[in-house]
Length: 163
Image (cartoon, rainbow, N blue to C red):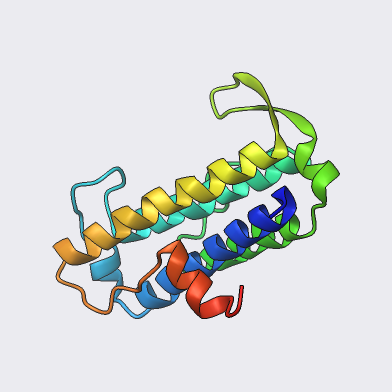
């Protein structure tokens, strides 16, 4: 397997998993989405919006354009997949040369870094995976059911038959 195919699969997985959580949590009331729980972010909504904001920032960095935090002021879950899809579509359009290209960017504190695009992409998807794990814990703490399976292998088995 080549770099491009592996990263395309990983990014498709990330979008699939973000979709599952966004659609599931959209079924809950604002009171549930905003109920405080002990984690990196104070609620289910805040955690999902953090995923949105981070994917927006990495999209901007990959494209060499200024980013903003948060991605937008709207805190509705409808905004999550807009940014997730934009990130995924961008990466799915990259070839190997684009993934190997070293990109200079500044973090949110203004520190400058240089990394190959493929490393930035892997970090972004992995970062979202970490926070989806926190969503699972939060959903359990809050007594929610129908927690969507989101392991990479579930994606591979259900979305990529025969591969």
